[in-house]
Length: 493
Image 1 (cartoon, helix red, strand yellow):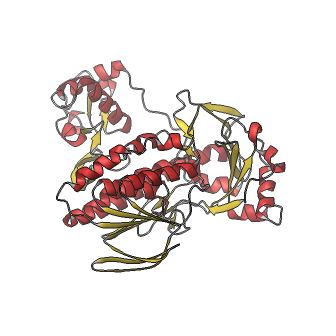
Image 2 (cartoon, helix red, strand yellow; image 1 turned 60 degrees about the vertical axis):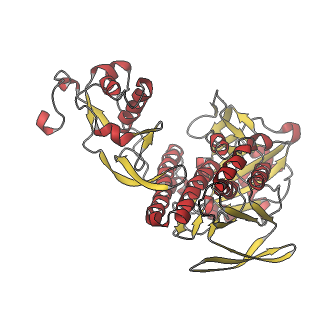
Image 3 (cartoon, one colour; image 1 turned 30 degrees about the horizontal axis):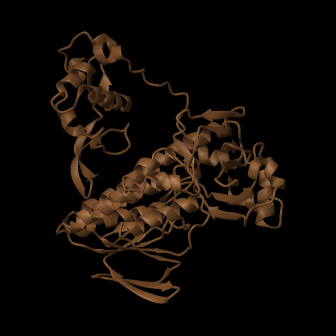
């Protein structure tokens, strides 16, 4: 938190222009975006409809969440939310029941209501004006900015500003990135009977997720087609959820327990906004891109996206001449993220679909890559030392919009079909200049040594291993490896 306040004071001391920014929605994406914009020196107002704390889905955090929160001075938010490490997950997916182990226990379970409340406190400390239990009832835009009317407990409030950020979450809007999906969910107060580990199960027509929460609560989700939920036996949503839970081997014991609060159902179709950003607005978090829940990384994606959105917005406000570059960067980054997660989800669904003929599984597994494709050769010290390497003919060096600390700018990048979009840096080192001076025909170890004036040997070898794994550089076939002076490509054959 102190880092957020220090960063904001530092920016206030500069001569950078200050803009008035309104953020709608105080989930992790909205709060992190607001904090970062305040750190950059903008006047930020954050509007949230609900009182905190409140229950919210998204209680399992992936390991990448913590460093992202630390980047905005919010590293203590996980502890405030009762974060409990997860060392194992009970699973029944593409084989017999078992436990997926994580000896490092890098992921954790939290109370999302408390996490959101803590992030809102940190936003206040960073200088963000928070208007809670308030909503936007009218908005207009003109050449000078935005005019909004907020409904608050004290009466209407009129706000005028320069930039609007929509962080209102999943709304069922946007372009579907997969089949229609619904998540039915309920909380159960099990006390001492609460299972110690999360569980995931692939059923005949759905998949099930159960997660133990701080305070003896247990949350269950049933992810299925909307038609499956409607067809389940029962006249109420709770009855239909119980019917589906009774079909689960791992969670069927809950079907006779008492729910703690109302049962809910929400659209869980992965979607991407058709209009995610403009010169005076940006969509953040699930309002910009919502993932298939199988990813279990929605919170991490939302925070990553919020940090990128803040740099994009800062560029639009302070460097309007780079606006086209910033807009292109944000749109492309959302598209690449959507494509990457769709490929991963499809492959994961395919592992269960191999033994489950129902439409739910087959639709979601359609287009999965052939799992029987042989892996590439394992990289070992001998290969790095003995086999010559060259830049792949499919590798290209060009210029593309890239994310900096405060602004989006065009930078030299490397592209290749094997990597997810253009990359400018690996391990903090610019990649394009390194590849531009790649000594063709040298072994990876010799290449790493030739980069010694820019990159220490150990990080250079790690970069080369990553580039080899992605296909950006390739090893010469063994039969051509004896001619160290040969040049790559057809002329060397």
